[in-house]
Length: 315
View 1 (cartoon, one colour):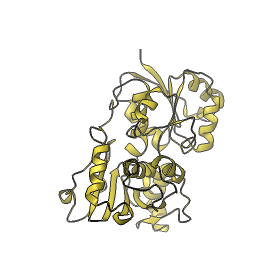
View 2 (cartoon, rainbow, N blue to C red):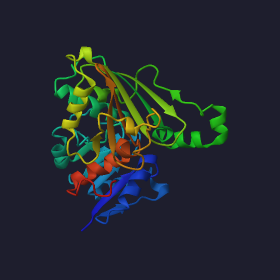
View 3 (tube, rainbow, N blue to C red):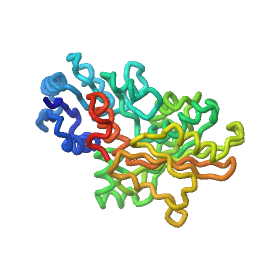
């Protein structure tokens, strides 16, 4: 018998992508809500409690409301918003972290990591666990991401030629300049850092794909070299299906010296590169902000929670 799955927030960017993934799975029965009733509490409540598993693809406040509506103890919830990501009663849905895969399998409440947080945590956590990077290291990082990460309003803004011209959206735009990005709390908590990183995100005029860049100085890391960092990351992710540490000599993956950030688009893959020389190190991860950075990660968690093969329906 197929599992019943409901996507609360089915018309948003993440929700639509999850629908696309679920359509590939024969062991899923998708519960749907009429568009004119998607804000009807009674209709939503009925579906939330009829489902074996629910995806919440909603703003934080609406996600909190949906959780409060669930009275069926058997209903499992995967939340894609910022709400609950640092709540210890919820499992953080990053299976590649040590021990998290089993926690997710047993969980009834799982939070999907933020897209920027995913690259930062997967790059830093192994180095702290290996004793290479001190917890109090003053980490700085920056990411370049496509406009689809801003949701439907961001997509409409960029893809409307008149608005794009008026706002001069043809050039990259830095944001969260007050260093208050909403992913910072989870970055600190799940990376193992003692302090929040200094994070600069950049939104650019292309649809999807993200590159998270983290420069490090080995002389503040017990004289670690770029090679040491690469070896630690490679050991941590050996055998992983969706996270891969690319060869240390990665010049072959560059385009005349330029890093190509869209190579993992339309997949759930995340690739980590370590560039540098001696104690000058730059870790760059690339992935799809709609894939491993959002909907793909959500479906990966669902597969674990429902006992499916982890890669079911994913590339």
